[in-house]
Amino acid sequence: MATTYKVVYKNHCVPQEQVASGGKYYLDSDSGRKLTGRAETTATLASTGAHTTGTSISTSATQIASSKDFVYVKNTGSTDVLVTLDNSNYLILLSESEAFASEISTSANVFAKTASGTSTIEYFTVT
Image (cartoon, rainbow, N blue to C red; front, side, top):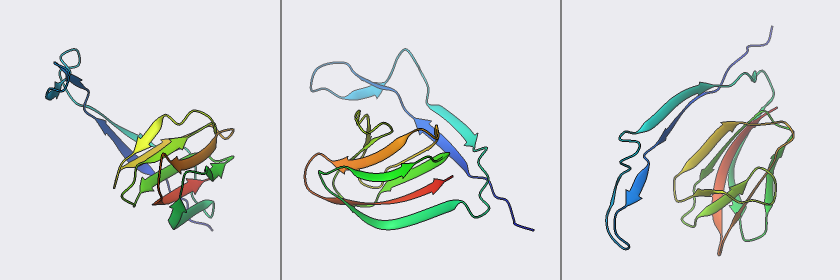
């Protein structure tokens, strides 16, 4: 009998605002607190998970995943990495040591690239 695992992850963000141009950033007054949340995928990880490390990323788009239920991407290099879920709108920016994890639509096509130079990433996907 195969063992079934679930991926549990936590999200955290601190909304910030800049009061004056070039000035210091402060906790966003509209929010007044940090936003956190815990999530658990519905995808099961019997033998469907794939973990890849040391992938080199450049200014050319590199496909990370397609037809997956869950994706985790971590920038292990020193250059910012851009991530897209539709191969056109690179809205996710990962600086050094930052990561992105999400349960996604199986129709998503996850790609990563840098704005300039090269970097490395590690990623984990689940079908």
